[in-house]
Length: 410
Image (cartoon, rainbow, N blue to C red):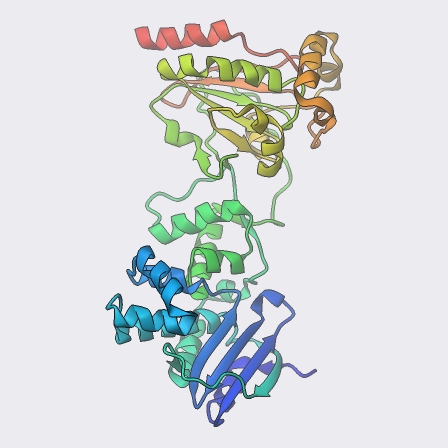
């Protein structure tokens, strides 16, 4: 089937009388869009970029309670919007402004492209309360696309971007940039980010491009070659990082500046050598928290795998996912067959197998990884860097308590 310019097809259809449905299909299926038009008006839209109407109404200041009441009493979207108008929760100009913004949200990603189009006459011809002038919306969408930069227009909705763990969000970044930065940790496509934030495509691509230029974001397929840095020494500044947490949030190490941090690098989420140590951390956490020590653990697993492994212990401290091992490299961690097979691991290994069962055999590529622990002073410098000589060679708890005691006495 022939590819046709989207803007040309819509512009031609504006002169068509009677209800018309346009179905656009693209190689990137996340762009697929359906428009219902009637006498030059955009009536209904179906797009992967559109948030739910309840989200749009909330952005306009309509209370969640009013939206719930409208859903109960309206008998559908049209009736629900009529209910909100009748009860004074919003007025006609506000509703029309919302409709125009939603139409732009659907059109901006596609007006500069060509796709396969199917045209159907008919459909629901009843006037929609939130219809938009098709020509005005189309012209504005074209203007917004025209001012987008070349890098922004090159982005594809199915692309996924990720936070670079060892790069920081630039100081002074605005609210939109921070929202995109945080949302990128969820592993969503750009189309999904646009819908869920929500953020119109031209705005989203501008923020993604700017964050990519600073190194804070990168395309998932743009990781550079691995480079393991030298081991840290006492007095070094602990490399900053930002990683997703098992509870759905994220943590940046520098946000803990001003308090002592016990940073523990583990192996995979079900590791028989690491989980017994974390059981000990859990038992000590109340005492450590009372002393002002923040415990942070990093694992070479995905967030989902963390929930299925160490998550079963319900740790009360941050449990962070770094399946690409980038923070491990930044902290100078290494692999060792000798350390993995060391007979001194056996008691801890047996305890861990009893805790994790058959799941302890899962490796996530971390089987020969040697863990490490770092005591980080409130000013961000390393007080002690402990690299395990063998798998279960964990830092003695007494050393941690002595360090904290010395800090309090200083």
